[in-house]
Amino acid sequence: MQRLFEIDRHRALGLLQAGLPISEVYLRMNVNRTTIFRFRQRLHETYTVSDRPGSGRPKRTTQRQRRNLVRNHMNNRFLSASASLRQIRERNNERISANIVRRRLSTSCLRARRPYICPILAQRHRHQHTLWAQEHAAWDGIQWRSVVFSDESRFCIDHADGRVRVWRRSGER
Image (tube, rainbow, N blue to C red; front, side):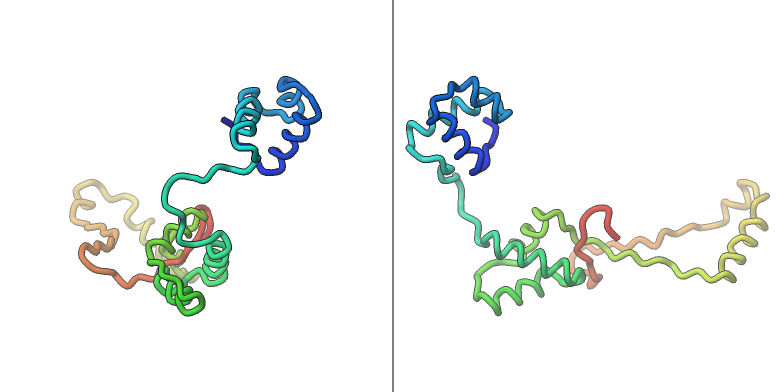
């Protein structure tokens, strides 16, 4: 069933109470016919237009707390989840974990990423790079075999690496 917002449910209720058939209501609201049919059926069962209670455990944070959390991280992108948790506990005395903070940020499309650091190349550096490339342009495979290239990757297996992270949306720098 297509989800109707609260205002759409009240609009559908008004149209149905005005005596319009389901075929006219779904055309006016531009939704599927079964959506209005099931809405009317549930209205007769529950006598209310509000949602039924959802299944599962209720969230530990409210929508307002989530918005505040996201706003804090948008204002200070380098704030860690555990530092944000300490602030929340000081203000609200809430019993939530750092994983809950990370999940709330993740559902708001914020991810912890490495900050973008651009190498600073002066005009002299660029000139030296160009000279090096021109000198080695004619090398053959035998000469290149004695050169080792390294990507300087870091691997951290059993502990936190201490690297600073920045919370950002995808596509942001």
